[in-house]
Length: 114
Length: 111
Image 1: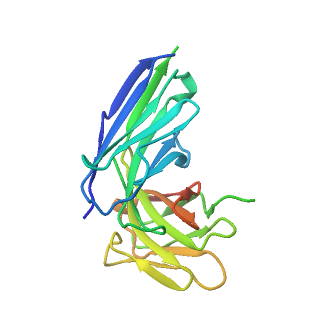
Image 2 (image 1 turned 180 degrees about the vertical axis):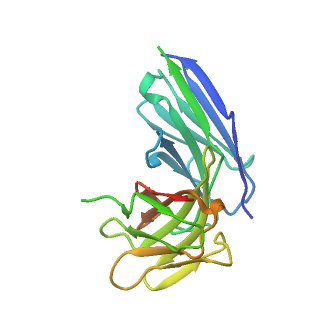
């Protein structure tokens, strides 16, 4: 079955720096890769996603890149702010269709210090 | 447009009791998913349902756990004869396409 690995598990940056989180997946059938942000005690919030027919997607300070050949995808946050501090999860769909379970990475705890 | 709703938000059960967790999807969403999150861990897929159908239950333990999404009313995740290891946050998500939106979760504590 699908397996998603996420690195690093913790990441500390200074305000204004960039942060990069990387994930790899195992199943070539996966075609949808979302990223979620979860603050302590809150629900996971979808922040950006990418499908396999796209190599890169950007939304303001957040971007995601996908390399389908190498089976890895990354989250890039530029000009980090203290409010970016949270746990970030990557995920991959288990099937090549909408309406499918997601397999999550173990998360990256991002700390942005001012 | 209300988001995904879950209740109760907190649930305390003694070992051996039953836990019932409810999830109402976002309006217009026909897909419901249940995930479990243990402290300081990622989300683990349990089950995926559409109205009156279980589509994928590959992540759900074979015993004591069941899920339904009836024609009317919320989706329900039922855990019978709870044990301490069932203590976790249970999140449901809903979608109508690829994007899944999560509810606030139910934090189950088994004493």
